[in-house]
Image: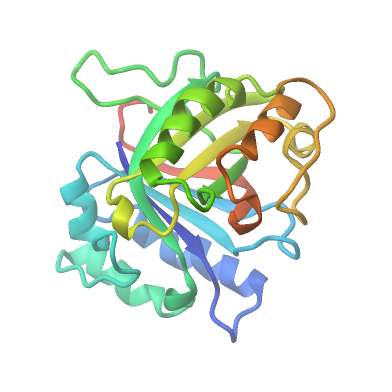
Length: 256
């Protein structure tokens, strides 16, 4: 499944509350019907005053071509769609977003662990489409990963997927863990995204630190082991992150 993650930054003339009101009540009803979208979820910050962004918008597509057709290519933050609803959504973006200040990421999601709905991340018997569970109400830590200086993207991915991920999926309290690899690494704004879901916000903070700091210092278990390994491949001070609560806006993957 291919995914477009927009790290939303509001216009200068809007408060965070005004931004959220417009985004959720005006823009989201349009975005959920963009041509080719099979799943759409939004993430609101748990502590807006400490959040690095005003929200996350995550749109899933079956093919990379469908995604690029609707939302542009990896190499540009702006886009100029020709299909009806995608064009309407693009026109509406100017009403509440600082588009140039909004990082984004296009990649392929790999579900590493999912205990949110039993075996919800199975392959559908009707084909190759992945079924996802309802993540509404879960707390999510999204880390936008930047590799260490002197490391190639390929070296970074190898360590992340083969060394770090087996540790991270076992962090205490994690009920879902997904990694997102860039579809076009040369034009990607980050080397990847790590998404860890928790049912309880305190469990998230205990494992990965609070909203106000990019760094964290867990004192036990797999969380401690994962934090120690981070120094082997991440430039942690250059790694934006976002802690929020997710709402599933639409799911056409076959899970619901």
